[in-house]
Image (cartoon, rainbow, N blue to C red; front, side):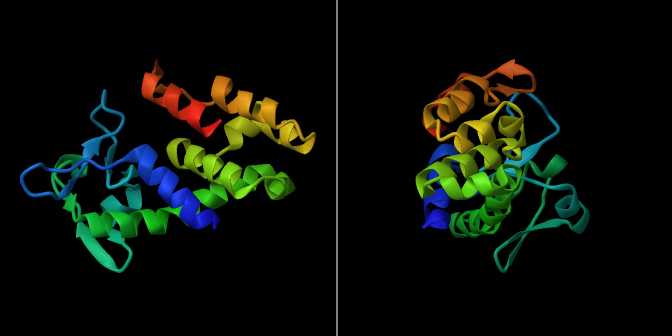
Amino acid sequence: GLFSASTNLIAKEEGVSKDKKTGKVTAYWDPKNQRNLVSIGYGHQIQKEEYQQGYIMAGDEKVPIVGEKGIDTKMTMEQAKKLLNVDVPKYEERAKKPLGDSWNKLSDEQRSALVSYAYNTGSTSSLVKLGLKDAIDSGNMKAAAEIIREKGIRTANGVFDAALDKRRRREA
């Protein structure tokens, strides 16, 4: 179903950062060219409330946040998978909500591409403002794909990012 397709797509797109010696999943600066935002696992950006409580909930396990902004935090692959399983439903909602009833006109594959987009950018609201909902409602999936490919967010910290450009093409 949609959850499985979205989880697999996001895991493939995001990947994980691992310590070669220990095999542990490690935190990283995300995006790379700054020292404020830290992610771990499959692109899970550590949230304000997680910093406040001092840990990340990976399913039923507490992962302590360690180091400056959490940059020294580590977890197992199993915890990274659990964390992704917790995150995906949140981003499915952030993909779906801006589209309203238009969401129901999409296949699971199209929906999972939009969940991937929302996971990476926060939501699909930027795409809706650019005409995605109208394209879907009129049945013009070619135009919908073009909006994602050509107008979707392809920058990190205001700088064009070739990896994001390629991701938008795959999502389209």
